[in-house]
Image (spheres, rainbow, N blue to C red):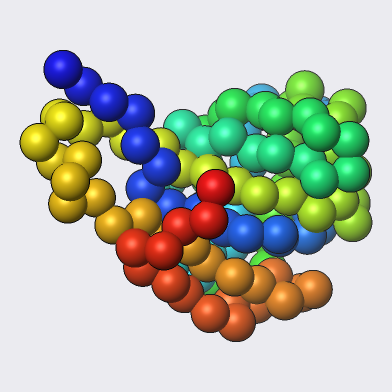
Length: 124
C-alpha cells in the first residue's frame, strides 16, 4: 500500500508575484526548494492564508536567493502579491517507509529568506 506524505513545507512565505499569462506552475526560489527537500516538477499544494484557497501545481525553480514565490497561470486569479502562503510538497511512500519519514519545515522572513529549517518536526 502506498501512502501520500508531506515531504517538505515552506511555511508562511510571501507571494512576490502572480502571472496569469504563464503556462502554469509556481516559481520558487531555488534556495527554498532545496532547503525543503523538494524538486523542480514536483507536485505541491499551496494554501493561501488570506482567502483559504488551496491550489495544486508543480514547482519551477528560480534563481537562488531572489525570494521568488510566483503563482503562474490560473492560480493568479486567487493568489496576489503580498499574500501569505504555505507550500506543501508531497511524496508517495510505502507504509514501511512511513515510520522513518522525517518531513522538513522551512521557515522564512517577510522577504522569503530562510530563518530556520526543522527536520522531522513538521507542523501541519
